[in-house]
Amino acid sequence: MNRAVFLDRDGTINMDRGYVHRREDFILLPGAVEGLRLLQAAGFLLIIVTNQSGIGRGMFTEEEYLEFQKWVSDTLAREGVKITAQYYCPHSPEDGCICRKPATGLFAQAARDWELDPDASIAIGDRMRDLSICEERGAEGYLIAGAEEIPKHLPKRIHVVRSLLDAAREILGNGVYIFGAHSRAQTLCVYLEALHPELQVLGFLVDNEEANATEALGHPVLDLRDNGIMPNTSAAVYLGTRGVHHAEVTERLRARGFTDIRPVTPELDTELRMEYMKAVYASRGRGFTLLDDCPAGPSPEASAEVYIAHSVFDAPLQKEVPLRSFEAYVQAGAALADRRMGECSFFDDAGDSISGKNRKFCELTVLYWAWKNGTSPWIGLEHYRRRFLLPEDWQAMLGEADVILPVPLYVHPSLAENFRARHEVRVWEDMLSILKERNTQEYEAAEVFFDSEGCYSPCNMFIMRREVLDDLCRWLFPILLELEQRVGEIGDSYQNRYPGFVSERLISFFFDYHREEYRVIFANKSFLQ
Image: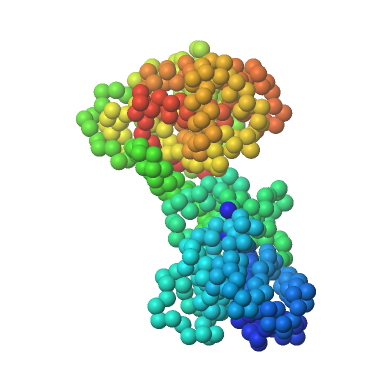
């Protein structure tokens, strides 16, 4: 549903000179246009609700008023303000109508016409009757002082301000923007709104040539290249883009007048994601256990081998990170490479392997090799640039756990729709068809999971017991290999990596479907530059 600001007109937007209906009597109040621009940029519909008893008193005709009303809208439009609609009561006070404020008939009509959520809307006026919707519903109200004596005991939802501009600034005082409008930025928006309900997301900011929607998650997408866009530059801006772009985006935002710019660093992203997932799991009545929170037990007898997928195409790290005692490099796609990498202890073309499929399967060729050739009681998979953040004595903290997965992340609006929006739709549909052919009951559960769930553990990373790995891979690889047969080659090299994209979602489904059989705990991961 939409959010609106219900605005009185005379005394709020323009000077109240008594029954204003002529152009020469319409004088905008100081700051009114700026306040309206701020509210508009925050995504509110601007709806004027006004008593015009001059019509009922015979001072001017309804036709004259409608002509004047249009002129008011046109005048504000030239100032960059779009009035969504104007509602007026033509009756005199003696008529006993249901539309003259403080009656709420006009508010109710506007709510129906524009699919408004009255409880999430706001009313601004210079008299208490302009805020009657606040007493009937949960709307916040802002009373502009000066027109009448302020009641001694105001309802909690009524706030006194000096002007429309002050009301706008107070409304947006906890407002923030998010730079970016695609998946990463939308995920950030979900985290912020869930964890910090006191914040008001004013909109998504963009300034590039990419195809951007006009709104996302119910918030406007504001193109800063449009000179008609007047964002509130005193609001904070979270950078919902990849870190590599933060410096240049910050420079462009500062040139626009923004000063409170907040890059979403890997550390902040981890903090938000972790707290969000704790809240999600708690709302479902399920435990969310971090490896870091597990107590250390006796020194384990079982050992772990965590394999790091590394290929000849990996750019060197800015700073070499030494391997931990349980880690070893495996050359991914060794069958396709023109050389053996000296830093690798293993090669994914040794023994039973699918190394030749690496261009599509990426790190999954190392997963397949580890499944067929690994011998340790615990086996893990990491990436050259993505490593688990593990306590020094993590193996003693496993307790009864069977699996370590990365802390999940959220994608909007669901795993299924997010995949369809970002990848080839036919890949997803073929994957579902394969699930259906293999096991109808499992397919039905998967369809519900993918359509309703927005959280999944990314990157095909894990550490798990050897027997659990056997169960996962015996289920996973027949699906992926059949999918490859059906889909074949995709011309775009990124989209051609579809087995890896699909497997992230499948692995998350597998452990959700078998959550009574395997105890999953989570660990954070790092990204190495």
